[in-house]
Amino acid sequence: MQKRLTLLGSTGSIGDSTLDVVARHPQRFSVYALTAHRNGDKLVEQCLRFAPEVAVVGDAETAAAVERKLRAAGSKTVVTYGPQALAEVAKSDACDTVVAAIVGAAGLVPTLAAAQAGKRILLANKEALVMSGDIFMDAARENGAVLLPVDSEHNAVFQCLPSEGTQHGGVTKIILTASGGPFRTREPSTLVDVTPDEACKHPNWSMGRKISVDSATMMNKGLEVIEAHYLFGLPGERIDVLIHPQSVIHSMVSYADGSVLAQLGNPDMRTPIAHALAFPDRVDSGVAQLDLAQVATLNFEKPDYTRFPCLALAMKALAEGGVASATLNAANEIAVEAFLNRRIGFMAIAQTVDAVLNALDNRSAASLDVVLEADAAARRAALKIIDSLPVPA
Image 1 (cartoon, rainbow, N blue to C red):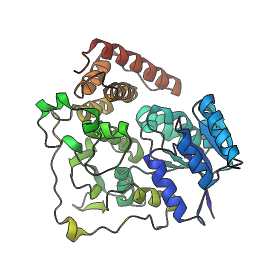
Image 2: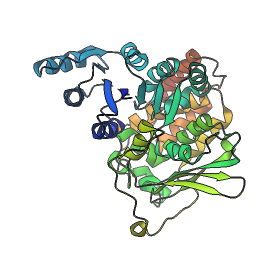
Image 3: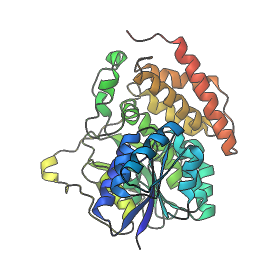
Image 4: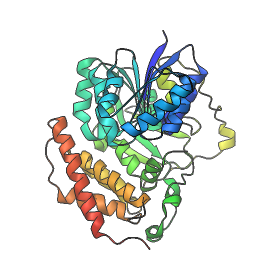
């Protein structure tokens, strides 16, 4: 049967890759809803090509502009806006599959709505689990939602796990690989002067600016460790991170008998997206086959926590539990935005996150309201700390 998709965050890099795969298989996939925040022009282009029933944007002004352009082009797509509209298309009976690709905390509520509606969820928004791990996983289990990871690392782990999962399959640990980003070999003392453009020049992947900075600080890998903990049910001490600059091995699973299974492929997000979209089938993703003879060499090294303090902070937040991960994520989002706007230096990202974690009390993540309160408190604290820091020259 043809899958009907709601794509949350269609104008980002994951959205682009998803729609590329969808376009290759019109007999398998159709689009019910596309959503964006304020990138109205790109959303209009996508709507004219894929003809969704609904388009959702962040505010009334953007909605009016999108609707005007769609009507002028003869499109019948209904345009709505706001957080409630996002949640509505995520849980609508008109779709069976939700691709959760909104970056950051903004993706939590609509992705949780999809879980509560028992949808098949292709999870690219790691913050949904980082912020509300147990709440989200409980909602998915209780409502029969199916979670298929789209992050290349988690999708690789999923492909390497036994069909019965981690609990009964002799799994000893998960190994998440990381490219090391653009500053893997740079002297830590020189990172003070890093510019936003430098931080966004990832050596292997084409991504949005926020996630590119997270990759440069390796906060992204720390968030992935937290996500893996909830997705696969392993404690933090059984989730390792290994630097692998070629980004050919996307992650590995180690077994009690000494076996290590790895998933390999060219660094292109269409591969995990196509796997999750068609699962349990396999379809053409548009990605070239991996040529190991051309790659020739695969290198590995342990992460340097002096160079990447954000990774250590994420590990600490996972160990502490409660709302610490939500606090970590919120502080990081504010700090990265400040860095991209040249209000703070690159190394001040970790400094800000650390200060917020130390300033706020941790508590049990007993409900979504508690998590959202912790998120808001962390954002306020981060802004206050950033105001006290020197502006880069």
